[in-house]
Length: 103
Image 1: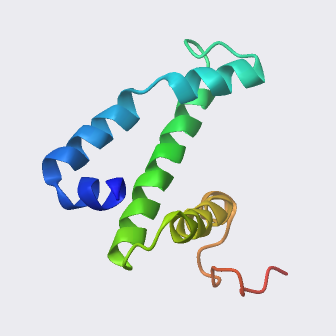
Image 2 (image 1 turned 180 degrees about the horizontal axis):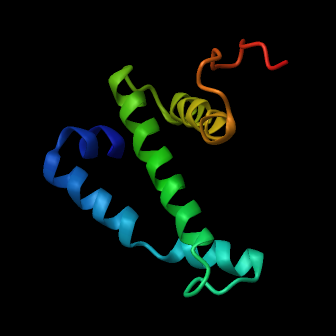
Image 3 (image 1 turned 90 degrees about the horizontal axis):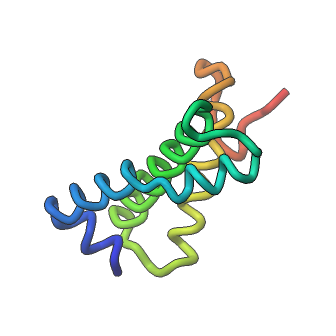
């Protein structure tokens, strides 16, 4: 429900984006887990930002496809998250997706 309301209301979407980009809780948790200083090591903040972007895109795609509860939202998030590695390190001239030949 929150995803529908947020994505459908520009002012709420803007507030959510500000929250995602200013929230340091995920950054601190990642830095603590990896035993690095988030003030000098950018990796926790970069990863937290990427995670926030995946949540944003997955929520938007879920809403556009009709929503349907937390299960479908999690499935859409997984689809986006599964493409992160190939998007960063893969060759974009080959098919993407779960059925693509990875040889």
